[in-house]
Image (cartoon, rainbow, N blue to C red; front, side, top):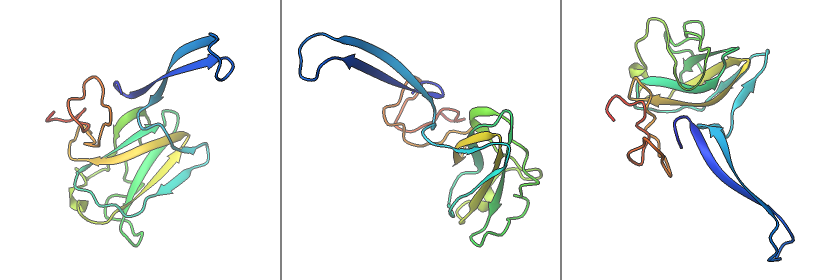
Length: 167
């Protein structure tokens, strides 16, 4: 991983299986956006995704989204599916971006600390875009603190602290 991209080194070969003759060979490099293995996609018609109840200890919701020509809004619901206070779709500041670490904010709410430790469902409303991932970070800058597997340049440990205020 480097920056916001995953790098995959690939090779291919043309030839007869089991033959030692040299065939045509090639080596290549494929890239994929961070957390880009799967996404919720929406066209002009709005797409909606509601999570199962999740518990978190962080305070800041972030998304990996490609919605520069569209919009993403999020609402927070309790276990019964009832809206939680000011965390409504209408109160959510629209996200119009194509980036792997975008904060989600609601008017009149500083962070999600009031919801920490409680079961919360997030409902994502998306038009003209792709939602790849979401997470709740303890850092306002968005470090996920998730495991990095093989890591990469700029990663100093086993977990993601990129974007963290305390690297």
